[in-house]
Image (tube, rainbow over all chains, first blue to last red; front, side, top):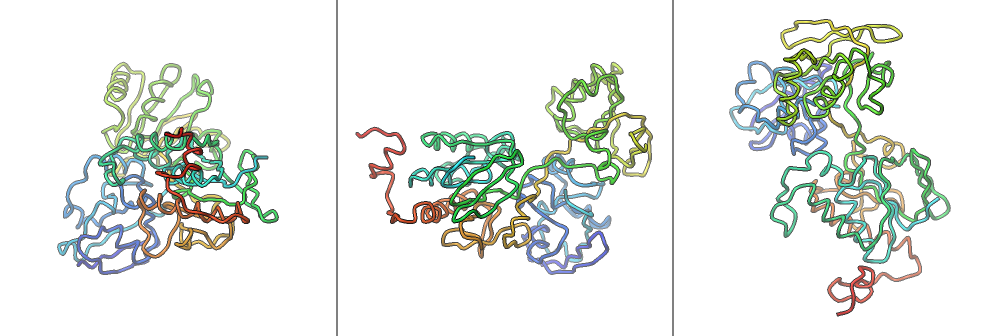
Amino acid sequence: MAKITYIEHTNKKHIVEVPNNMSVMEGAVQNNIPGIDADCGGSMACATCHVYIDEKWFDKFKKKDEGEEDMLDMAYQPNKFSRLSCQLLVSDELDGLILRMPSKQG
Amino acid sequence: MITTDVLIIGAGPTALFAVQQLGLIGLKAEVVDNLDKVGGQCSELYPDKPIYDIPAIPECTGETLTKNLMKQIEPFNTNIHLNERVDQLAKEGTKWKITTNRKKVFIASSIIIAGGVGSFEPRKFPLKKAEKFEDSGVFYSIKDKKYFDKKKICIFGGGDSALDWSIELSKNSKVVLVHRRSEFRGTPKNVETVKKLEKDGKIQIETPYQINSIEGDDKIKAITIKDDEGKIKKIDVDYILGFFGLVMKLGPIAEWGLNLDKKHIPVSTENFQTDKEGIFAIGDICTYPGKIKLILSGFHEGALAARGCFKLARPNEKYRHEFTTTSKTIHERLGKKKS
């Protein structure tokens, strides 16, 4: 279980507890947090679950694989802290994770 | 005007299997899809990626799945209207009148929406000013390449569309290729060609940069690009082209007065009918308690929706369930000779 802070581009915060082994994307969708569309349902095929990971947390994740980097080419305004939240699995180590969502997803 | 039993919106796997299910019970369908090919997300998003959860098919690609579904519906000679988007629905007596963006009109007793997550549209530049110049200075596809002859062009993107057009347009124009990182995801051959053209001074490559601003009032004069560290460069251009792939937009579906749950259409799990009689929704676009977005689920939903359509198309007939293994009628519909 990890407490995750999802911050909308308007700075509105959503703090929710997400069970282990769920993706960070699912944590948002199941809690009705706006800002993550996840059109393809998590198959890394659409880049609409794009998030910016807080700098302090960015290195805690496994490195992006090539497919994710390819999809991020299509994301809306990616930067060096960009990830696809469907590829990030929740674990106890992520307790306290902070991430921001772009102003839109497509 | 085309009269049919069922109009299917979308030509993805779920839609194609619904054609088969309708065909088996003797209903005629017409299919409309905004894309230029069948297969929906399978063709557009992951044609080469293997799928492992189609019953009895241990592994197949999106492309193969689509091909096989097309083969399976061959006996029904279904018209598939590609490059066309359904824009309007209106009730006409007991039937529905469906109008496309190309003003094609269908009359059907039922509509099955198998629209995935909506229609695919090009992803656009994140700048307000890009909207203003769209189709005059900002483009997301190329219809006539002569338009770009002897111009200063800036192409954005890292995939094959961006690379193909950089190579092609560099023959007659000055091309700057901009990408957010230094690796390109196009085919090795394209990447090699572009790198060679850069060495020969035919293409200028700028990485890792993204668009920052567009300058000019009635036409584009220049753009600025920016890297992750905030470094800004100015480039003089006439036209800019963006190749960032496609995004799914719900589009006109949102305007048909259907009950919506975010981007999805709630349905009854008995026949996958929406809150409007005669309009059904199947596949990724529908939602109900326990819904999972699987091709498998879409097939089941299509089978049940087809039976729902039968009641409306043949109100005076009783639906009788028959099996493909034994039914003579079904064998006739499939064009199978008696053994």
